Image: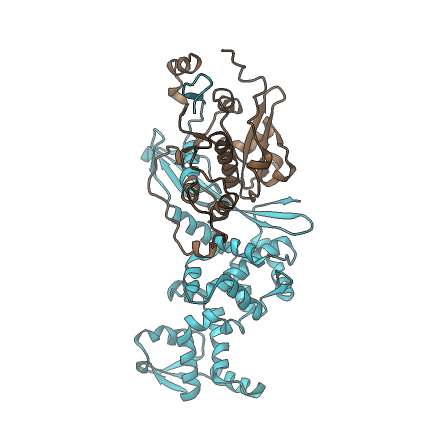
Length: 327
Length: 236
């Protein structure tokens, strides 16, 4: 391309020459434009500039009729360091930023997560990835219902963590070295369910696994590093956080919900879950619908009225930093 | 050569084809603005290795949009850019598979422009709105500029999210910017911002301005804006 005379075009532009403007160019090129620099501080001891980086993450809630809203969540996610000549000497990696944003998003919505987990405590055990990834819990519960007392040595080496989960939750107790027996909680649950209609041991195990999943969610995800079942919790949380902030059970298309998960969901959970043959985000949503955490309304997905009514009281605690209403 | 004063006059608008450049752009503003600029250059310079197929651009936007909570970077645009030689997929891209991959950003701290298919994406931080004039008047054809700013700060003085628009022309007499907002293209007419309000939203993002041009343009700033450069520019 040339100018009218055929020579190279030369564009002249005076630029801001500040630590913030250098940080902004770095953000634009390498990180992503939901980030922005804060006010730079010169740190005399290390003779360098520290530029705080802030993320302003949008979540758009669209409706077919009436105004839509975009919620903006603001998080402080780290610092870039520049030398006196504004060269970047300490960067922030993209993955570190993703983790920082996700972690603060989860902290903000912790109350919603906790309530969702407890609301469905009797139903989590029926979901595929809970059954698949907590299978040893089911095996142990069925064995304890059958024999009442079991030595750890009869089971695989890595079973101890599942014995621990059952013990922490009060379903079994230690009777000696490496031996456990079922407690009245587990035995009573079995009796109660039999009286209620002749449930099988597996259904008791469903209930126990669901309760453990609800109560020990953080331990299962962070210590046992079992991520896949989090896909259910995160998907429900993404829906209800928006609905609560919107103050309405907003219908959403499955694709929109997927795009929200793509932006703010737990990627490790997605990978672990979707590496299972025959599963997709659609099957995850269908399972959430099957256990009543979400519902289908024609082509859309909507929330559960009772759960929504319960969660809406926590709106103040999860509110975004700002919101934009648009047609 | 007569030059308008930087603080007066009206720039010639970018010859913008509303029907061709902004079809089905979606609402993620940065990729959508980039596609408008790429189509603009493809129309002017048909040899550029960029697709003409509508579906390829739609897929590009789907892949690029909302990939992470960080928003779009120039390197992400680079990664997803279709080339003119690719055969368009019949099916839309499977975004569920794309989520299974890590988004590894190349290491480095350099700030040089990003080159996409012979188009240069050059992030700049002009010191004021008057600095936006040169890409209109010193380049022929004029260079599309993507302005990134905080729209909520502009309209309501509250911090909101980043937004990107493509600059169509500037009226320094009325102190107005005329822009294409990719979320409002169905109106088929520019949005109009006044300088003062726009500056408030723009400064939050250090006056970020992404210039998109083919190779053969030189952007000079700071110390490079020497008298020699000035002579090279005004004396063909």
